[in-house]
Image (cartoon, rainbow, N blue to C red; front, side, top):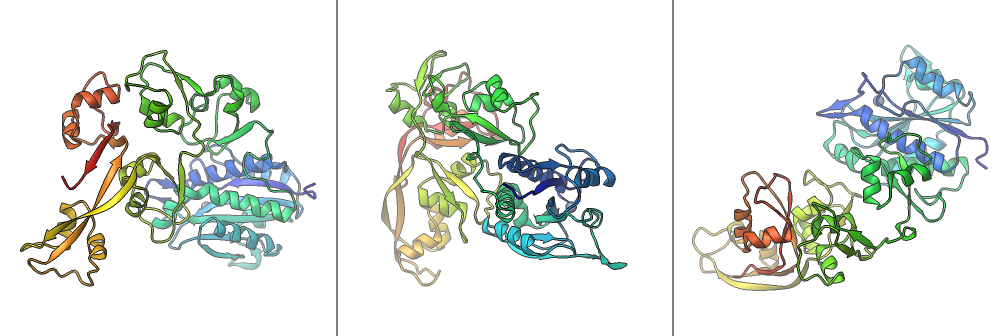
Length: 464
Ligand SMILES: [Zn+2]
């Protein structure tokens, strides 16, 4: 079925050897995440597979080589896939392959990573300076007949690659898995499709616990352990868990309100919006009672996934979908404004741009496109485009039409910043403290920085 191929997945470095470092990023962490994911995927595809380390531990060269050469032997159908992150100035992925091996598989792997959005740098062989008949890397030199490849997914010290490694590493690994499946002649199936019907899969993220995942998918720790044959509660980042389809669980579309719940929290958990919950349950108030039963609407089509294209900015995408940059960042857990091509963004449902209106503005002394744009919450580019201006120069008394987005908003989300008070936020949004407290089920006016506050439904019209 797989023509006799066996795979050893290697997570480079580990423990006291961090590999390449940049800021607080360590190569060993990326390598481990990639390797655990890769190992689980090959297992899922039914290929005999071993892994050199599945935790953050130090391995001696001998220990690493032992797994590589003693598990499955020493022939060319043993594929050793060593996961690494590059450094030293450069951008994109590189594959290094042994002198004894053809370039077919390295080329396929690099292409596959390229198709996932990473820059294809090169695939090449590297020899020992003192003996060019030998491979430079011991994982090739000392693994006699195997097909031993070193995969460098990107450069840890390149800002663009950093972003990609943080957001898209597992996409690239999935590319490697697909390329290898094609090379060894097995049927490639996407994650989760190889599992029995009635189950989905979930990839374990940093900070996950079985309890957290069970809650998220409305199942139990015991059930998760049972269907995944888990002997302990320990999880690895990148581990693939089978999740029983909620459709098969009784009361899948009902939720019992617990202490501390808010509509916002529940909406988030079930991939829906506060407004849908309100509509669906005919709620006349946003205040919840412990023990109250909420019907949960099906959410399959309620959210949009957007793939970042060249030239995109958060501001542009937010505008396109009538949401705010803050909302986009919040729902996608982004900590910076940087995007990488191919990155997938979750677009929150709800806010729609209804129409564009304009107001007439007469240029005054000291005005610039920038100052006017700022005043009316638009951009200099938008004013230029709307007025078909070919230069940034304005003349006094010149008449401009300023495009105003009249947005019909549903509830929006505000993230509490340093110095915020409920009173201040309420004032900013033209609502009352009481409304905010009700909508967010707050018992006190104390806020914590980073908290998400739901801002109630309103029609905001910047012309007022
Ligand atoms: Zn390395």
